[in-house]
Image (cartoon, rainbow, N blue to C red):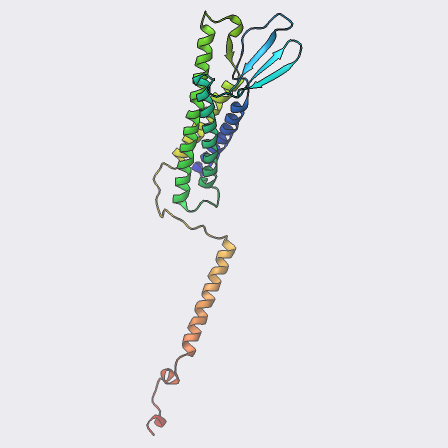
Length: 241
């Protein structure tokens, strides 16, 4: 019962992790401008994400530009794109496997099949967590290094945005959910490895009654099929005349 509750807790953590990873992948605020312009035609806020760059102007206008060219992007940004997409794909696969490996569900096969599905889903979650943690760490390191560089103008300095923190939290959820799934099935199992799911008690009782009735009918059929000579227990004079 305790392992079932832990599996459900790990499933919820993994679900939150994949939702956060998808949101972080699409958000445009992986880094935000660190200074505020004083000119009316100067942008007051700049945001850069994995797929687009957005700008808020002091006049109230808001504009976004998509990053169409992949080869013109820096290496850390290309890596962040690739790893975040792989993280979402692996986490989605792990979620499907986890629904089969949950002990509280009736689908997914026997105990051995559920155990393998749970371990596989845990591996997918852990791998997805690392794939989400690597780009967030690398992106944060690049932003901080650029911010501390004295040769970079003040107008070109950025700080880590909200999407980076969402990515860190999502990576933690995925790692914890995957670890829980792996540990919930790591112990030894006693008894038969594959168990057939039993029907409800009412159906089981009805099946037992039907089997007993069939056995009685077979016994009656065997008794009636015996020849008259087999049913005689003594001798008769007519047998010898």
